[in-house]
Image (tube, rainbow, N blue to C red):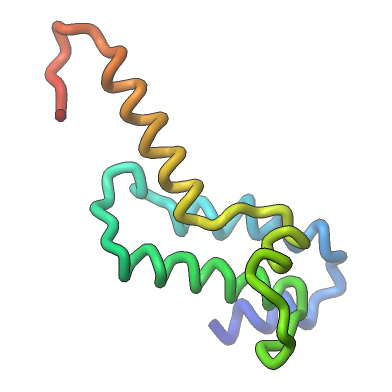
Length: 107
């Protein structure tokens, strides 16, 4: 996490570009294979906590500041990561449900 801190905190990149870089490079790696994960409540909490931590570092909000998670998310314009995972799973389910009957189904 030290390299993430150094890359975000000390760079001269403006805030919208930092958020865009986060959306383009970190989120896809974080959600790799998320369509088929079996998420427990504990793993959902950990994923959301990591996502929240990254966004707070990008926005340079110290952990001592009393800013709600909703406020941080609205500043960044990002929904929680578990919401994105849920949408991807529903999208995959829609593709599988509409598949031809000749194909082997995984369900």
